[in-house]
Amino acid sequence: MEAPCPNCGKDTEGYGPRNLCRDCFLQEEQLLEVPEEIEVERCQHCGRIRQGMDWVEVGGEARSSAGASESTNAERSVRGDREIISEVLEDEIDTDKISAVSFEEKSNGYSLRLMVEDEVEKEDLQQEVETFLEVEKVQCPTCARFEGGYYEYVIQLRGEQVDEALDRMMERAVEVTGDERENFVSDVERRDGGYDLYASNRETAEELLKVLREGYDMEEKRSKELVGREDGQEVYRSVVSARLV
Ligand SMILES: [Zn+2]
Ligand SMILES: [Zn+2]
Image (tube, rainbow, N blue to C red):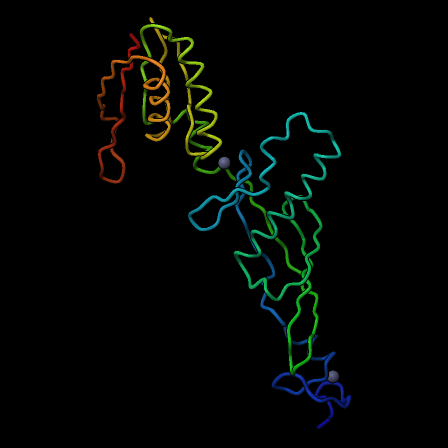
């Protein structure tokens, strides 16, 4: 049954609890609750974005952009923007109701136009919603560790064929970093009769030692040194003496 819209007086079947006409309903009601501003932290070194306690990869190809032509880089950058936007939106709001997203890049983020679709009184309604996605440039904890030369393991490589062994270990190091950013070799130092390799964590160190075990005869000795306290816990650093014979 049609009745006059309480706002404008136009005859209408009535949308929503106030029985507004369709135009007034879309002006007053939001089909989807979208905050006026959404914030995300993005690491300016590795490009990952923060979701809760996690740092999430976006724009997977950004890492191998060396040597690419300019147009390809531009295309990649737009795809990277889109990936950041959709990753954040999926984390923040109910994207099932969003049928299209357009964006404009700003110095501190993106202004977004979302096309929202929803069924109201058995009719599909569409509404455009604007929001701003602010991107805060930060350094993620992993990159901060890398920059700071962080390490938990020292591998003291000594003995025969150390140059060749070092090359093999560094090839493996590139692979383990590719698998997981937390895995890295933060430094290599030339020592009398060999090298010291500084590995960020146990997984990295074990992978490097595996290279030695598989390719050489090795005498291995392990020790730990106390480096300090963190949250009331004693923090140790492991030293692995690896002598190739
Ligand atoms: Zn009306
Ligand atoms: Zn980072």
